[in-house]
Figure (cartoon, rainbow, N blue to C red):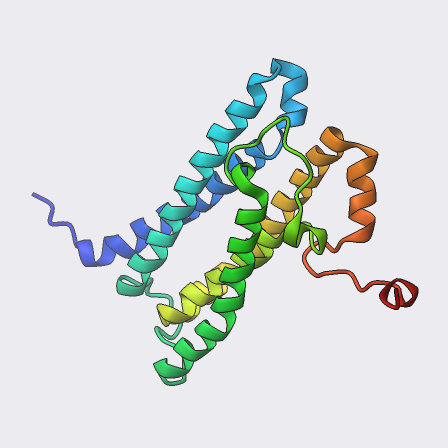
Length: 210
């Protein structure tokens, strides 16, 4: 009978699941971001289907969060320092400094987007509120939270792994914009000109003086 060394296997199993969950989260979110394109093929049911994809993507994202937590207890034997080279208190302080405004931005975006944060709606109008300043406040707020989680778990490896979310979030936002141009046409194109992708655009001096 073979005795399995779970202490050795768990880190690799968890890391493998984390990579797979990350890829599936990305795949299903990309599918959820194209209701207008899908509508051309299958009709109005496309919006419901994209809502289902969005929920699946959210489940995989929560799984990655769980993988992060498990990794802090079962790190890979890669020779990377297990903790940051400073007191844990500093990590907590930095996490709070980054996390509070990021969480606020993300939640503000969720509230201003309403139901469409999770379930795309064909008749939904262009968002107001924070969206009048930036086009992707939810992503801009959520992205830094991966480093906040890494700091709270005191893991340099997870901080490095979190770099993968930068191209993923940018790609997801670009996919959304491609579909929104189909849904709203010139109205959305004009909106793009007056707002920033992640950072608010600086208004022209003449406009600021009004």
